[in-house]
Amino acid sequence: MVRAAIVNLSTAEQRRNLRRSIGPLAHNLVRPSTLNRYAASFQQFTLHLGSLRAVWPSDIQEYDNIVSDYLELLWDTGEPRSSAAYTLASIQFYLPQLRKHLPRSWKLKAVWDRLELPAQAVPLSLEHTIAIAGYFFENGDWRVSLGILVCFNAMLRTGELLNLRAGDVVFTVDSCVLHLGETKGAKRKLLQDESVVLTDPLTLLCLRKLAKGLAPGMYLVQASPSAFRTKWNKMKLFFHFSSFRILPYSLRRGGATWYHAQTNNSHRTMKNGRWDHLKTCKLYVADAQLALSQVLLPPECLRKLDRFYKTFSSQLQSWCSSGRVEGIRRD
Image (cartoon, rainbow, N blue to C red; front, side, top):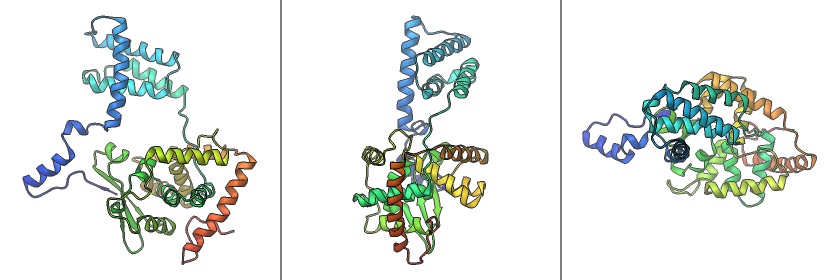
């Protein structure tokens, strides 16, 4: 469920004011953070090009050869996989005349992608998510605790969770709508806002507790990205799994894996997780299921997780007057 970037307003003045609040078209081509990455990558490429020759090439084919050699240099010097993607994207952004004229460079990038799989976040199981939420709750970070449960059940990206304000949560009788703002998916679809509808009783309970007493403009979790990462890393040290790629994004991956396992419905998982294509969703879930099956946490870590899970799951059940909360195991 999404909202269009600009609704069809009735007067030119209304449209003008709304468009000016959004900014010029050129400023909405890419996110500011992405533009900064483009600038840094393109600067590195131009420095490399300047070390090779005094004058930039005038032949498109020559560009393809130079960029190909530069990708080989990045590969050989141990640069991360993302550097190849940002190099090519930045070159085509600042030199749009080269679009579709770098065939060899893109083939080398495709080979790089096949040879070096991305190091992705390990998905979290429901039980481990509840245990982690219990850790934060016991340590007084109850907003982070409930936010973690919302993030898992709503399949949110970390930035989407931290940017949620009280006014972004619209409750109905038995559901709520989260207006997520300018998300990654909204930008990809050329939409200003993206929304998700939630009906899970536990998630609604958490959102009501988070939004209670807050003005519409106040953040639900009330933690900056850097503060949230610091808290998350401290939690990893406590549970002794710092050596595992258990990142905040593990909540979204785990939530999608759990939801698909419960429903066995790829279409519903795709809709709730806001993927564009069914194939992409299926690959995402299959990869997450495989990664989850290969995680072997040390015994000490498992004992701590089990203790927090048992304590906090009981607390969650006591909050729910119905006595049944979707996703909470009843032993």
